[in-house]
Image (cartoon, rainbow, N blue to C red):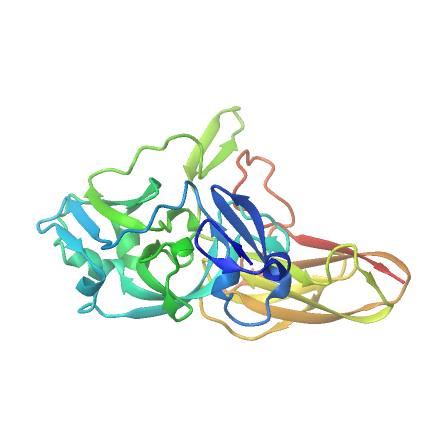
Length: 336
C-alpha cells in the first residue's frame, strides 16, 4: 500500500492499473481510461489535478460569503441542510488534458447544493457581477455571477460518498460542462465583486496569433467535443479479421449524437454504437472493424454532437496555448 499526499490509500496494483501518479507535490494523478467499464469513475481512480499543496484538514470547516451582498454568511455543513439537494452526472476534465487513453478526466455523480441557492442566502447586490472563489490551498478563480447561478454546484459528495480530502473535502465548486480550472477545491471563501480577478499570466487563457502577428487572449470555452480509443492500445499486435474497438466520447456543449471509427487512417468511416447518457456525461462506444491484411493499421475516431459540431481533425495552428486538446485520436496497431 502507498499513501498519497491527498490521504488516499491505494495499492501499487491500482497505481499501475487504474490510475497513474504523475506528480506528488502538487499532486497530479491521471485516470487510466482503458480500465473504464462502468458509467462513473470509481472515486479511488478519479483523476486529481492540484495547483498548490494539499491543505491540512481543519476541525470545523466553514465557508464565508461576503463582498457585494446585503447579508454576509459563514456557512457550515449544517447550514446547507435546509437547501434543496441536487445530483448530476458530469465529466470533469482538466483544460490541459492530452489526447490519449491516460487522462486528466473522469466521469462522476456529483451531489450538493446549487451555488444559486447558496448565494441567495446572502441577498446579492446588483453590483456583484462576479463571483470570486478562494480555496484553502491558495488557488483562486472568478466567474460571472450568471454562470455561477446557472451551472455552479457546491459539491459535497462524489459517487454517493462524502468528498475525500484529495477531492476537496468538505466541499468544492463544480461547473458541469466546463473545464476543471474553475472547480475550486477546499473552498473557504466566496466574494461577490464588481470585476473579475485580474489574470496573473496566460495560464488558462486561449492565446492565438492573428494575421497582424498580434496575440489575442480570451477565456477558455466550455468542454469541447472529444472522443478517444481505449481499446486496443497503441502498438498492439492483433489478429486479422474482425476487431472490436472501444472508446469514450464527451462534450460540454451538447449531447453526443454520433461516434465514427475508421480503420484506414480516416479514409472510410463506420458508425459506433453507444447508449444514451446524461448531458454532461461521457458515452462508452464500441464498433467492430475488419482488418483483412497484415501490417500497420491506423485506427481513428471522431464524434459529433447534437448541434452538428464535429470533432476537428487537427489542432488549430493559430493556437499558441496548450489547452483544449480535442483533435482526432489515432491508434496504430499491427495486424499479424
